[in-house]
Image (cartoon, rainbow, N blue to C red; front, side, top):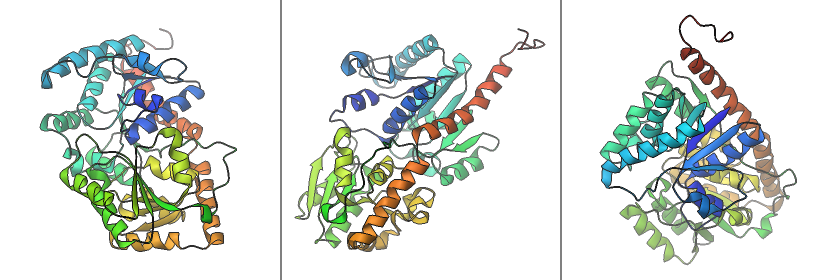
Amino acid sequence: MRILSIDFSIPYLLKDENYPIGGWSIELSIWLRALEDAGHEAAVLTWKGALAHVGSGQQIKLIETYDPAHGMRVAKYFYHIAKVLAAARAYRPDIIIQGARGVGTAIMAFVADQLRVPFVYRVVSDADVDERYKIGLRHYEWLSYSWARQRTAAFLCQNRYQRDQLAARFPGTPIHVIHNPIVVAEDATTPLPRPERRYVAWLGVFRHPKNLPLLLRVAQELPELEFRVAGMLSRDADQATVDAVNGLRDLPNVQLVGYVRRADIRSFLSEAALLLCTSHYEGFSNAFLEALAVGTPVVTRRLVDPDSIVLSHALGASAHESTLSKSAKMVWDMDENEYGTLAGRCQTYVKANHSPMVKAHELIAALTPLIAKQQRSCQPLGLDPIKR
């Protein structure tokens, strides 16, 4: 199977640069490696010049398309579409997968239609599936995304909420729930004991969905706890987010540590007593899995606890916003033995449920019928495809 996707952040991720990387790019990079390891071909379309920028020795196959700075306003998309279509046609994919809503969704749906291959949309946020899909998008961007959804052969969801919302809107369209993968080494070190964990960790890009004002409020309510906040402002950060970051900077119990490179994420999370999530909405946060993989419990708003995994598997605390501070303090105050049991449970859960190879097989099982159906529809009338 030849699988094609598109992403313009992966080159920065591969170089581990000081660049805000969204969850879809991290998830996609794991999928691409797992698919190759499972014996399939996978590639990602990206920006012109990326190959020289990244250098050799990367397992992920990059295919250059266009310079995103080229062209003027909306008219530039005609240039972009031509370049993407040419690159995709040369790769000859069996199927196209795209994630992160916007104009790119429509471009890849159009390209798939031109190549007569299925287009699959990977939902990367709960906002993709309900009335929040317009948030952060210009009028033409959300219209493009809405148009593309009507032409989607199947949806790949991160949780049951996403599945249920889409099932109501698109009856008859195949919809699969496949949780995010995470790489955990078989010889992963035992989680650090509680005395060696010194702070509450928060990790993400500083933008509206991450709800920095709530983080500020929790840090103010727990002055005896140390908070280390990792991330950087997004280019489109709203004023409430900017104000909250400035407020956090002024608190004596908060340390803004800036962007944490991928190579340092595990160390940052493993030395934390807990990972705090304050988001308005998520899908399936990669940060949750990265924390659990090193035995760090998660304290999150119940609203963004994907399929209630934190609550049902006892991986920290899943709380309402009004009790989030209390839940964080409860995990912080656990005695060493109780905390050690919790940390071990977190790591065991990830190993058992989020292996990239297992998730890759789930993905292939979802994609295979779509390709077969498309190939049947492309056969000339009256011609047996086996005898062709």
